Length: 379
Ligand SMILES: *Cc1c(COP(=O)(O)O)cnc(C)c1O
Ligand SMILES: [Zn+2]
Image (tube, rainbow, N blue to C red):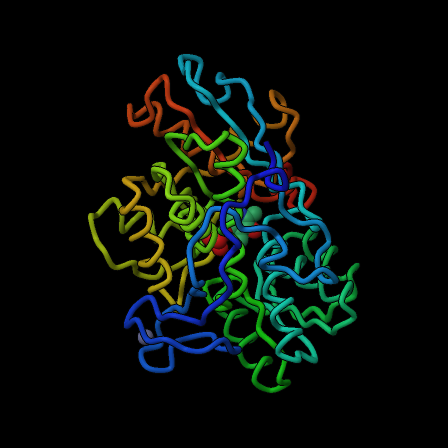
């Protein structure tokens, strides 16, 4: 069963306003990135959480490019481990219009931005969010300015340039690009579509990912869902989808690279507070965010992982490469390194005895292999 065939029991509730996850302050619907009282993360509050969200509840008809509704594909359990006898399914987010799940966030955030009268948009990005923003802005006929770290993979930069956005390459790690996009947004009066927790309307649309997984499994939740994780909006979306559907929450796995693992480190140390990471270094460019300036986003994500009884796991670049190869050679799925961290994390959890041999495991593969060739060069 796919989402469009899902029975809608109640009329999906409308957006009510924005709620601060930290101090619970409430704001009417407006363009706001943070709680003005405590600087906390904002989330969209809907009148009623229901299972039957449709894409149109998040994205305007003239903004959509057909994002979402991605397949949940069974693959050979041997990809996880030769001894694994359960079910392994891949949620293939490489199929989105610009090749990553960021299209879902950007389509929703841009829909609202246009309602709010945006004259242009900015986005900080490790590549994929920028490609998505450039893609959707081009289709909407709105100028886009994208700030990327200098080390961003060429495939992602090529997309941004092809879609005709203004590209600014910012020295240093992602945190600097994040700051630069904030400045540009202020200077120009452009709407900031940066896909951390900064734009609540974008994050809100990710609840469809959770809901689509439930629908694809005919309402029976899997035991595990593994998610390549940077600051964590995708974790939140999957979590929210299960809350909305009022079905048991799977164990959620935040998959990080051990070259940039602020959430996995806090999890391993039993801490509630995530601290920024010093010097990110990993082939997984899409999750190479040290959370400098907004570590509370990592703490929020960690709290959701814990609520689900899940795990936060850091895997090595070699583990990521091996998972990429397995996806390509045994499942015909070409993933960027970041996308394969979910499978790498589940392989680890199986060998540690946490994933058991009859479990149902969903790995979200978040971005396409055409975007990032880092794993295929010799240096
Ligand atoms: C952005 C990104 C992630 C991380 O998602 P968050 O929701 O920011 O944690 C994972 N994979 C890919 C390919 C991405 O582009
Ligand atoms: Zn607040």
